Image (cartoon, rainbow, N blue to C red):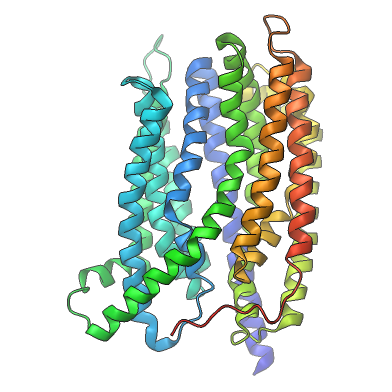
Length: 453
């Protein structure tokens, strides 16, 4: 009996891991295609705008208050299933409304005036808002051990985005440069369809439609759960927002602290590095995502044979495995870069080549954070994760600002050393975070999540 359960669990983990990797690969490929299309058929300013819009969208992602993540480790009984679905539905609507307001506010802040720029930022942020709302349904699917299904729905959204954008690229008229709007509009449509699918299959849509027909007890339980989701989500969100102090803040600082021509070239040179680092980060996140429901079960101690030994084994094997996986991929990227970068980018900036090995080391050193941060969330220690993330993020932000101020104005071109300095500062900050997160995520058997009454 136990052997059969273990085989089923192993097959489930392989399915979760395989689809998580496939999702990571699709996200890498979609943004890689967008950058390639903008490089070949667009302008440097258009690519810089799209990169900046993505940085602002990284802010909008946190309007979800980490609801999807918080739902997974909730300790609920089978009798509370309907209440959980209804609570998730209420939370999803709040996320959608709040995300839209956040997108509009950020777009106006980013522009400072009404124009084409703010429209692009708003569309990218709205697309992220749809993903946020979809994550609530995704959290339910993961809670019921259907991570693989949630991953497939998100993969479908990525494929839809590429297909819609590809149609616009194919039909591009000769002599007219590709616009960031051609990439942003399909992103919104695809994200909305993916959100609808995740709501439908997780039961969120059905729970919302039947909301007035459920018993008072279910509604009361849903209200308590929704409050608990928001309460738990705040520290997790603050910890997740620390990621803004790394690549997104660096992107904004380059635009703010360097002159216009210098800044555009810097962002164009930095964009491929961001995508490579982000792609390797998605591989790490895939492992962390696949481990998350199992780590949460180990902390709860009442599912899948969860206990301290299981938690310790998952944590250590996860950190080692993700570091080795990202390290091997990083080495492959470095070896293949002389051949693949010219194919991908057509024209490769020397600054990109110079900073690439530092960025690859950065990705490898920081890979384990995807697992250790997940461990802290599973242990209901979001506040500690937030402190570690914010501290390392501040180190990165302040260091990058100093490097840019010292390097700005050295000639009309951006010096190669400037981008290398930015990469070294980021590497130092992520190393601090990696060590601190690993130490902090050590097993604490007494810190089980509080049972929801």
